[in-house]
Image 1: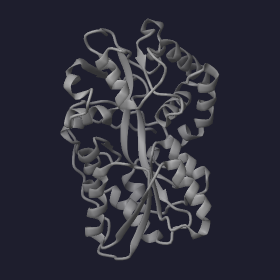
Image 2: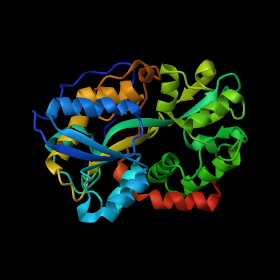
Image 3: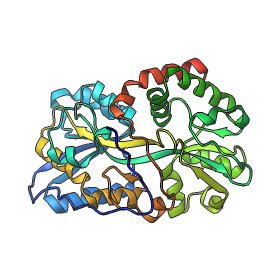
Image 4: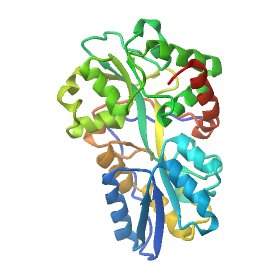
Length: 339
């Protein structure tokens, strides 16, 4: 039976899961997470375990290609990246290996794990609908509503090459079927206020500038604008409302940040210790406090900027099943002319 998690302003604390006793050695991380706030995760792990963290950063596809080229000589122990589509590309490329960890199995909900345990999710972002409160009195309440002709010329959303949108469409295919997904994609293209451009923050800026009245973005971009000064958003943030879509159906789509152990990891034991550390309450809380994300582990408290968005029901569709739909999603994007 699928189970529903509810995120909101109140959360219970679970017991801290320590990464390990002081162990020593090193762990080599290939990471496409580009957040300065992650430095705290690495330094706390080093202090707790005595394991030195060595890190190479780059774009996900470049890191995956590098791991493939390095083969058995690769120093990589861990790949960390953002979005289910990239985790699936890594699995399909053969650069990850199954992980046998009772800690990861117990801490990370099953729908946030690869079916073969080659990757696990450690933090999440909801992909939701934002709107101009002064101009839109009846915002879309579901993802499918974004295709309603009454929103023609109002919607800002990223390109079809964006992994967040690829995974969202793959989830719509899994939840509603290919025909409904094709109709949705075609309808959203018809409703676009402009050709797809920029990142998620640029979609929010489109609302502030008046270029569009409805936008799709991940929650952490908006929460960051609550917590810090984000140019073109924070000064006018009160004009923006938001909807967690599909609350009477599947729930809000969740993007995943996760990782796995490299197939030729020279420090496999330390790699598993690091991934287990990421599921501990201290690290899980820091994903929220440091980068405005939702923890993957149920019951961990939220930072004020994230909690300010309120309660919602997330979609707990099996992300391994969603990953299998990614080729279909790209085909649909191409068919409907989504740039």
